[in-house]
Image 1 (cartoon, one colour):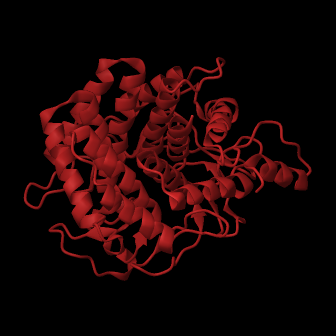
Image 2 (cartoon, helix red, strand yellow):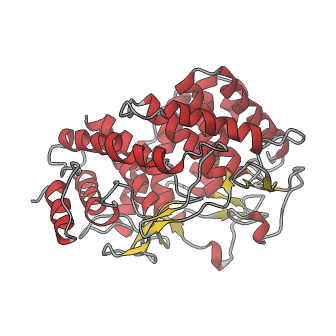
Image 3 (tube, one colour):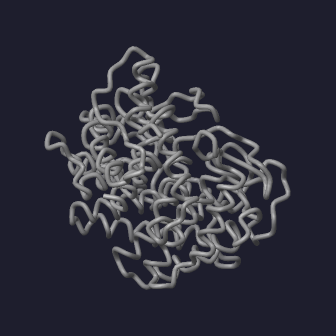
Amino acid sequence: MKSYRQVYANWLAGLGMVLAVPAIALAGDRTDAAREMKTQLVQMIMPYWYDTTVDHRYGGYRLADDARGRGTATEKQLVTQARMVWGFSHAHLKGLSDGKRDYLGAAKQGYQFLLDHFLDPKNGGYFWTTDLEGKPTNQRKIVYGESFVIYGFVEYYRASGDKAALRHALDLYAVLQKRAHDAKHGGWVEHFQADWTPILNPGPEAIVEVGGLKSANTHLHLMEALTELYAASQDAAVRHSLEEALEINTTRFYPLDPGQSSFHRQPDWAPVTAASSAGLSYGHNVEFAWLMIRAESVLGRKPSWAHFDAHIVHALKYGYDHTRGGLYSRGLDHQPATDTDKVWWVQAEMIAALTDGLKHQDNPAYAEALDKLLGFLAKYQANPSDGIWLDTVTADGRPKATGKAHNWKGNYHDVRAMVKFIEAFK
């Protein structure tokens, strides 16, 4: 069997290029694979994110790059600004610096930009978008985005030791509990105007998911943020909210039968029958699986490995490409995938989930799927010049969306998955 290095070198040779930096080796020996993956992160991937996105003039990050050429950023959006704070903080914590670039400094200026320009001093919470200089251009409050502010600030606190960052995260949590928590039915309302007036109509104002509904996407990422906030703060109220979010995700959105997963629920948790809400996301299902284990660990509970395995096995059975490697995008209950595109973040979450599964116990099916997935990424989705994964390729690896950095794509999913792999198999 050819190594990833051989596959990657042959691919580059076909393009008239030479392999200059080690590619990821096929994980017959995952120690070598982890070592080479760390080399990629240190020598290529993190330098790319630092050199191309840090806005040294205004602060924050400019995200507008494509494999076909650089674009021009026109705004700064809450989700990716916060994720970039997380990414640079994480890189600093994990020792990924090449000694030439200050990742903690990159995180600090992004953190400060959020406080100076996104934070609403009157109503609390953080605006959705600003222009490049930091003037708010969309002042809506969207809980999906607020969740990543908490997530990013907690990681910056861990990296820097700045207790103010943890305090800001706790302050935002308190605002969400006051303004967005549904005291009657549980869970959280997701969309608001600047003054926290709920947006309940399913129109474009919601931006993320559907106005008036509760979504798996938002509740999953809120659980993710609450997990790390509780781990860092040990705050009793945060623990209670994390327990609630965990219960909602494991029963309402990602139940033990993965085929019954749902994108949306009515405010009272009744099913949503609209065709636009039908189906499931393999990427979110496997992301839920490992985030569930993480949440349970932080809470001191016995991990629900049977629930974890149910979602991974379902994804492997219906949503995985066993010929070429890679996880498809979407499907319906217990049927073959309906959308076979391979999106960068979906692959990242599958790497994270399979890595955690293999840390728990040896599983040949998980190991084979992980090896093939890494091989597919190296051959088809990783940009040769810098290692950045292209946004979307087809099932057979043809580029479909060649974005490398944009408002929804930063150094979060893939860097996190690679670090998890490195730490598991180093």
